[in-house]
Image (tube, rainbow, N blue to C red; front, side, top):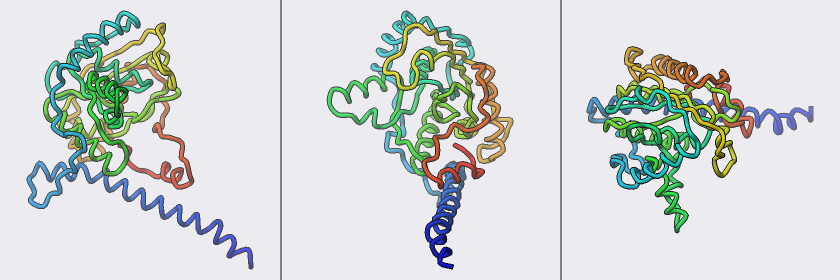
Length: 302
């Protein structure tokens, strides 16, 4: 009988704690997945007791791209064309005005340079706020570089940080601009195309934005993960697909509409990129039992 207290202390109690933590995290994640659509709906309805979305730390009213952006394009675009001879297909599919989301596969760091670089209109991206907060000459170079490619700072993470990122993207779209997002969430390390998360679909449905699918080919060879500089020889292909109107699928506060819209977007990206389908979400390896259990629980990925 002496073994039971020992087992309870070293085995059963940690398992019970892990199970409670998983349930708690799942409830909290599901809550904020529902919270943002609800808050947006209340804000638009003008409910007197509505809780306004938490203001992002970066300026929510994003200023138009300015001198640094156009100088950056004037230098980077000709240089990239000379060195890498990229194949650009479907530029005519990009609406010149209005709300547009470029939804792309994600293979390399340079994806965030290539998409806006060869677009006929300015494209806003979200970048880690640390890229803009550096001190000294190195910090100034980083800040000017990311400003030049149309990036705006955002705090990354889950919970409130994720809500802030969605809110900032929504405000950029609401002003009639174009943004670029990766439905997979992060880079594919094995070259396969992973399942899409629903944040892109929510923004498209909420703002009535058109989605331009983008298929990138060869960027992972031009600049593999861990490389400091791009290679010269691999040619990169950028395919802009025809705009997708998702309004027929339903409202943004419908989980089914978000999932169907996401699947339609990913099917279009797959048709352009030709990647092997992974059939799962691109998630970092779980660092502990709690995270492993959390990943297998059914929940909506944003």
